[in-house]
Length: 149
Ligand code: HEC
View 1 (cartoon, rainbow, N blue to C red):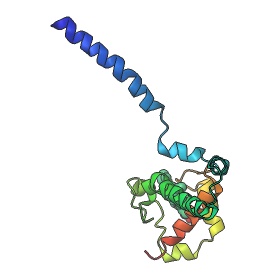
View 2: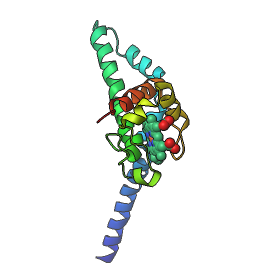
View 3: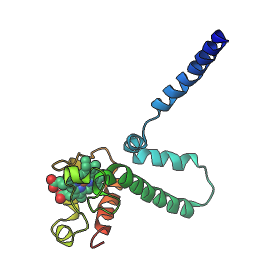
View 4: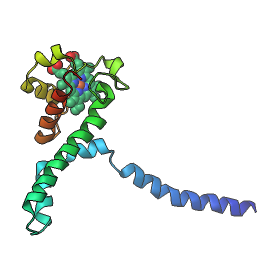
């Protein structure tokens, strides 16, 4: 009985070992977002082949970008800023993240400054200099949408 149990454990280890490695090999969603570039998107379009649905495809691209912005906000920003930008994410109080919904704050900053703070970081906020342009612009619009909420 004993040797068999050991063999079983060995088999389990042999089986789970590679699976665990594979799981670790997978980049977390945040990291893979950063690798995305506009060039990837062009590739997607070309491999799609001619279907004559350019309009529809254009629309779904825009939807894809919006989803990427949303995913980026939720995974990279909401940890500090909270889902609605109030600075109430799990790490928000620790770093004293700005309440981005405040009128006074919104009125005192222009889009270029918001973009620069995202790209270069500010105070305890890390820089996000690997995000595609499209996503940074989308995040600026996202930040603007918090105004007065
Ligand atoms: C580690 C926590 C943290 C994360 C993650 C984070 N921020 Fe911030 N953010 C801060 C802090 C803290 C401030 C206030 C910085 C200061 O004024 O010193 C700030 C400030 C800002 C500001 C105001 C900048 C200014 O010029 O006044 C914007 C806009 C902003 N963050 C957007 C974002 C976006 C978009 C993301 C995700 C891509 C993000 N933040 C991720 C902590 C964070």
